[in-house]
Structures are given as C-alpha cells and as structure tokens.
Image 1 (cartoon, rainbow, N blue to C red):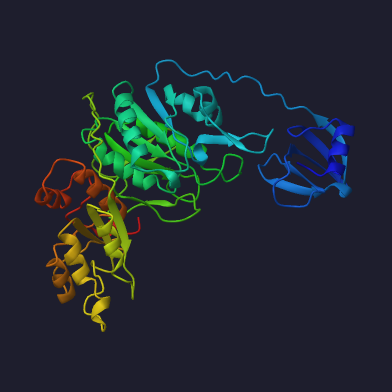
Image 2 (cartoon, one colour):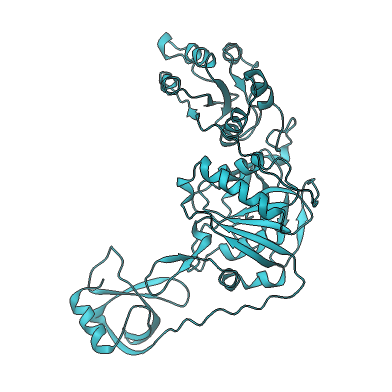
Length: 436
C-alpha cells in the first residue's frame, strides 16, 4: 500500500493500481503501469512499470498526472495451426511458469494453453498443447524425491499419449530432477524436455520465451531421452539440449548458466525450428513408457575440505542412512595421512562402509575419479568406498538412492553404481567435452 497522502491523490484522480498512466516529470512525459508499492522504498514514491519492462520509482512531489487509461485484460484467443504434433506440458513452478500480474505486482501461474502460447507466440508454428498439468507448484529449492516420483509417473502417462513432454521447472535444482527422471524412466521412448528461465517475463533480458520455444521444438524432434534445454549463449542465438544426467547449473544468473559436464550437448535448437544434433541420440519410438519410481531417500552428500571433521559421517550412521556420496578433492581424495590421526577420514569411511554404500566423486566437476594413482587413493579404496567414475556428485547421489530403492543386494548396488544406466558414465572423455 502507498502512504495515505498518495492514496488521496489516487482517489482524487480516479487512479488505481493496474492503470496505465501518463505523468509529467522534469519537463517530459513518462508512461507506465502503476504498480503496488514494494516493501522497500519510501511511501512518497510511486512505481511505474515502463513499456521496456523495467520499473521506475518517482517521487510524487515531482510528478503531475496527465492522463490515465484503464487496462482491460481481454480473454485470450490463440489460433494454432491444425495438424501440428501434440505435446503435454507439466508446470511445476519457477520463473518460467509464471507471468507478472500488473494489478497486484505479483506473479501467477500460467495454467492454460492459450496463456502459455500468448507468452511465446512462436509455439503456434511448431506444436499444439494437448494438456497442461500442475501436479504441484513449488520452488525448485523445495523439491524432494516425493516430487520426482510424481513427475516420473505423470510424465510416463503423458508420453504414452503425446509426441513429447515439456516440464516447466525452477532452475536451482533442475539438474537434480533431470537426473531423477533419467533413472525413473528407464525405457523412455520419446523426448522429455525440462526447461526454465533465469530472468522473469517482465524483464527486457527475459529468456523464458526462447527457452520454451526451443524446448517445445526439441520435444517433437526425432530422439528419445531426458534433456535440459536452456540458452546456449548469453545472446539469443540458440538453445542447447543437455543430457539429463550430465547437466549442471554453472552460474547463478547468466542466461546460459546450464552446461553439459563431461559430455557434448545433444543438440543446438534454434527458435526458427532447426535442430542441429551434436551427438548420437536414441531415436524416438512408440514403445510404451513405464515409470520405475522406487527410491531410497536415506542417502546423503558430504563435501570434504581441508581440515574437515570426519565425525560428520557418524551423523549419517546414527540416522540409519543407507548410502553416502563423499565429494572428494581432485581424483577423489579425502584427508588421509593427516598430522593428527583423528583428522583422517579413512577409518570413519571404513566404519560407514560396514553399514552403507559409500561412493566418492570429485568436486573438480570435470574429469573422473581414480582409485589407484596415489597411495592415499589406494588406502581409500581399501575402505570399501567406490570411486564413481566421471559422475557428477548430484547424479551419483540420485543414482545411489534409485538403486537402493530396489531389491538388490549390496554387491549388486555397488556393481550397478559403476555401470552406465542412463548416460551418467563416460568410459572415455575427450578434450571437446571440457568447457563446451
């Protein structure tokens, strides 16, 4: 709410939040939508959203209202070409699933095909949206294995009824979800494309429109698998499709934040409809898709660092965890032959390995672990811990939870951790897979 004095002016002039108003300011004119007053800022400042998408705050003592025009939202009527392939859209939350409500200043979920196509009108040239489903609305930082299970079951059903599935998702943990779906949809026969946005719809630098367009194009292309599709560069050149188990968010805010790790992109997708495949892909088919959602949530992830206390492992043991991924340094090191014996992680890992499966990854991100190059690595390998090849830590965590959710004995779980189930392990890495 604005201050009482400002509200009196609004009432006198017949102005309400959501009106398009034109004001005189410092010898010129500014036109914009009157927004609610934010929680920060003085009460004597009005906020206008300009045509370019940016907000501006103006002191009321400096402005004079010239005219206003009530914004009337017309019902959306979007025509889509006939004969286009049908896709299903699953909206889970996140920036890409919402648009600004100029009446309240907040955002609301896009929950109809017309609404989504109206934000990205290019879609009408490539796909028709069969159905939009909203199993939950949640920030991606709040997602758990329970939501992965729901998504996997719903995605499998929709794949059997559509040409492909596009999942609108928050970006923070998008790569966790893409890994989970990669394992939970083991016989995926069509494209599953997870897409998000780094910038909100009202910003001039918004990326959601192009991301959604490219994701929809990729969802009807000739391939099968779980992918993340996001901007390929900081410009609006093209998007990249990244294998679901090889994706990582590498920047907090850049539009091209997501990169393939230890892998080539699956494809470059252009907003004009072109798809340029960059690596071999499994071809689409009409085979029935079934979800396999067994999952053990009692798995943990711990990062070692110089001087880190190995007693943290005791917490996971006391809480009856069944699996633990340790993100080591370099080739998969942990503090070993320390000057103080009690600082070494070796005996703690040996103790943990009696009760749970322990895997080791590298915090280097690129490259692979190795259990035999250095003497400390060989000591670690004798504890029962598994070096997890070139798997990302997040992927290894989810894979371990997935395997432990099944009726495998321990030796089978350890064996399968080193088998390539969903493209998570590359036995050979090339120079072209670094920083691409």
